Length: 165
Image 1 (cartoon, rainbow, N blue to C red):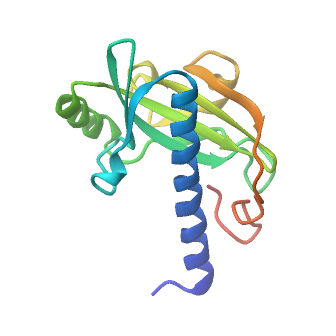
Image 2: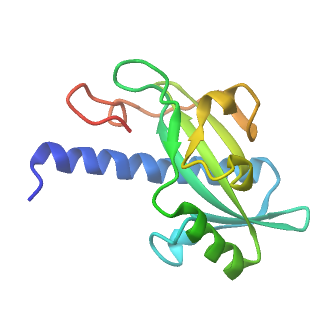
């Protein structure tokens, strides 16, 4: 049975993920995507995808990965894992929705956030989104860069005694 510290850490990570989905939806809407649907409203933990959206007659399924920008040792949290069997799960979701699989990496810092967006295909079967390459413009595109958010981030920060997100 998990102890109190493990429960708090699990809640922190879950809340950060939910916050990321909200910020991801906003980034898509602000980037003129249409018919944006949170797939978790239809089925919790939908395989691979969190969001369905359309733009310019193209359909997208999007996996959102939200993390702290920096690890607890203050270095860049440089790789956001896609999860187990991401490519096979994405393939099933692509077939179901007639859509192309994409990812969204959302970096949260104490006062700002950034959003990166790209196709799963461009990752070339990597198991994680490489944030340094996103920041350098080598992979994906930047939808939001270091934009100010206005919430108390203290709950979401990596704690010295907790795990890195």
